[in-house]
Image (cartoon, rainbow, N blue to C red; front, side, top):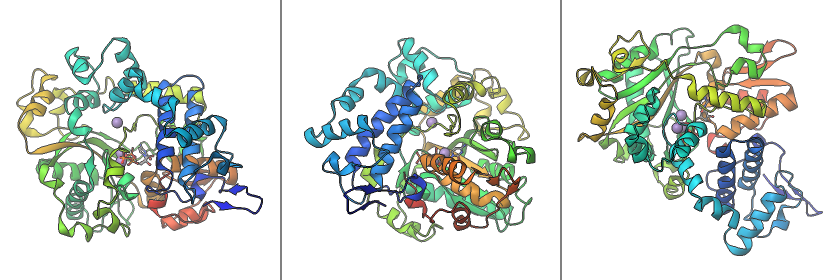
Length: 470
Ligand code: CTP
Ligand code: MN
Ligand code: MN
Ligand code: MN
């Protein structure tokens, strides 16, 4: 964290992954404003916007790690991550309480519509732009104009838009997690079931539930996801989803980052989907502080920062993988191709009815209802009276030998990963992914049997998950 040197120069470790970044920090007003600029640049998705977005992210990241509340931009002298543009915005904020540049973005209808449309599951900036070009203004418009997407994420994301855009509470994540733990343990005794993502970093709400599974006996995890989905289906917890086979191959380990990742964030077997969370999951249980496997979960139960977290629940695009090692052009390409990628592979209601050898899951009760008109079925379900809420869930299976790298990767934050990967490459000449850490020159992997060991190999001070909120 930051220090004042005698000459007045501020020193903060160069890399975000070397710093402590907490959810609750002293410069939230400033970082919120900078993150509007970042998001705006990300949504514009134009030529220089990718690097502009990154520059804003770096600036907000450094502000999160400062041990004092900034009162004057002169206090930021010597911070290379805070450039002239950001300083002007910060001055505005500090002098006037608001920034005209930020206000203009917030008030612009383009930004508002882009935010709205990209908050639909499966929708990225390029489709959102098309909708705006077609003069659509609201989710209602999108539905009415029956944008006939063949992407299951979009079909169900639109039908359950309200559900999916209301924050997932910590209590819901905990309740669902314990069911997954129970069912997985029955199927594979000794299984490790770990809540990851924002909740593991201490957030009291989120946009989805990320659960990583493994087993110390490597290989025994094969088939687990399939059976776990059957068990959850039997408990009527599954709405819709898509199972991805592992695309992991030994040959890719020492391949160039861009090549091996092809815009994906990892190659694990996983299920990305939407679950039916009973409304009762939203009730805080007294024991929910006790059963969590995170050592730092106590504070989460107090919901102390609930209000602050609620407005930081943001849309997230798993489909919009990027790493800093990608060139800008590449990342645009990836975005475009990823948005399209699942079109055509998408389950119709017919293919949904197929056995679980396929990749799609849908509740058996509904199968009868939607034999013919596939567009009608999700909407019928969404409009019907129900005692559950649709929630995004990611289930990821990692072989144990890769588990601790997967754990770091799926814990995030996104920017922490991005920074750590770039740091590994630039400073150590190593390739860091969710599968491992690789010495490209020696063609050698550096295995880890704990998160601490991952940090050790990276020559980084160990950071608890709640300190990785950059
Ligand atoms: N992640 C990943 N590979 C993916 C998708 C996500 O490694 N295919 C990582 C992300 O970089 C992030 C973490 O897994 O660090 C969780 O992703 P996500 O759910 O998108 O973000 P959260 O940080 O959990 O935020 P939220 O609370 O909004 O869910
Ligand atoms: Mn999304
Ligand atoms: Mn998440
Ligand atoms: Mn997720």
